[in-house]
Image (cartoon, rainbow, N blue to C red; front, side, top):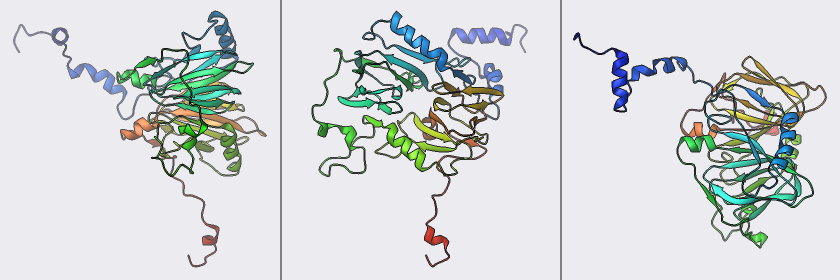
Amino acid sequence: MLSNAKTLQEFDVELAKVNIRGQWTYEEVLAKVEGSPLPCGVPHIWKWKEIYPSLLEACEVMPASFTARRNFSFITPESRIGGTTSTLLMGMQIVKPGELAWAHRHSMGAIRFVIDGDPLLYTAVNGEKLTMESGDLVLTPSNAWHDHHNESAKNGIWLDVLDAPLMFGLHQASVDNFGESMQPLRERQSDYISERGGAIRPAWETPPPADMPYRYSWRATNEMLRKLSDSEGSPYDGVILHYANPITGGPTLPTLDCYVQMLSPGLETKSHRHSSGAVYFVVEGEGTTIVGDRELNWSAKDAFVVPNWMWHRHINKSKTENAILFSANDMPVLTALGLYHEEPELSIKTSPLPAVPGNLTGRRK
């Protein structure tokens, strides 16, 4: 070695001057993820009893929501991302009676799960009025024009989940304002693309796009939960339903997936973990979700986050009433990249369908 050779630290400084970094500087970071991915942030819960008064106060300090959404974003502690998970941003929004939240669009895909809704509360998506009654799920796909209208006599409140951290991380975030307070609406119901999401469709048209406006009504969702309530469901999530894309049958949106699950009275699920992060909203009931070594005690209208790759299980505290949780995750992104996996086993779309009764009798098939 030459006597005038630089130290490694001095060498690092010289490299930095020409925008070069030696891989050896990453050793400490790589050691943290040896054998498994590093969770983004820590488990956290946002309590409705704290959120709701702040939402009402926001209506006072922001008398009008025409120039800025009256929206709270839930930032996970220690995430270093500025989101709720590494790819998703969860929050809540309130619109007062008679208000219109102006029309815009963005590259970020978004879903709205309605907390306090009304038949006269709606989101217009690409010119289509999508009613927002309590429990409904409304999609605003990437780059879809949307504005929120509250023509009811009470506040409208909903849960927002957007793929904003992913879009910003990929440098694909963009926003366009419509230029008017509201977009023009389709005049005829027969022109609604969202009406073509069922199994019966116009025969003379091309198939509708997968990223169309859409509303999953709580009435239909709750009915399906009740129909399947006597099923064993998943040992990790109870009776859990997928908000499948009505055209493809795949993820709700290309970058995020939505689920709703029913935990029967007294149910304690098995513990598992998955490479996707998930955000939850408590539709009804009281219980506990144990994430790692932390207990998140929840009740109706609370919201919480389960970071990626953390062991977790759910407990319904009631011995007589069901508990229902709505959730969204980034499973589609990880699946597309070949990075989605679970421990101790894959729990999604793996159990066989119920057998044909006649085939169980031993008769010739």
